[in-house]
Amino acid sequence: MRQDVVLRGPGGPYLRSGQVAEQAGVNVQTLRYYERRGLIAEPSRSPGGHRAYPPETVTLLTVIKAAQRLGFTLDEVAELIDTGRRGHPTPDLRARAQAKIAELEAKIADLSTIRQALRQVVGAGCDSLTHCTCPDCPLPFADLAEGRHPEES
Image (cartoon, rainbow, N blue to C red; front, top):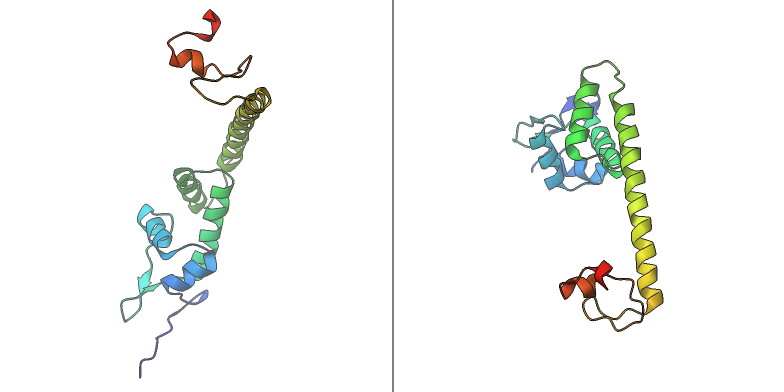
């Protein structure tokens, strides 16, 4: 009869890959990828060779996923985690968050422009990117497809 050996650490029992992944809401491949990238520490091994993660790994994975939802790339998350591991607070997170806000505001402006253009397309009754038959087509694509510039029309 097989018995699983439960390793214990300062934060409680260690967790296997599947347990960590499930609790953090990621898959095991993501867990291993983050390990290879250095976002999470390489775990110790159980006597049977299984990865044994400390419970804090779940918290760290949750933080990583939350930072990604805020728009930070994995490279940016890795840098922020590294800064935090040095043990003293820096204004880095605040500055990066402000830069992210500016980036998001630019994207929102771009998306608003796209939405307005699409509304014009729908309102005009456009039926083709290259041979639109609607009067006053708001899309320059038909002219461009024929080698003319919109301002030449």
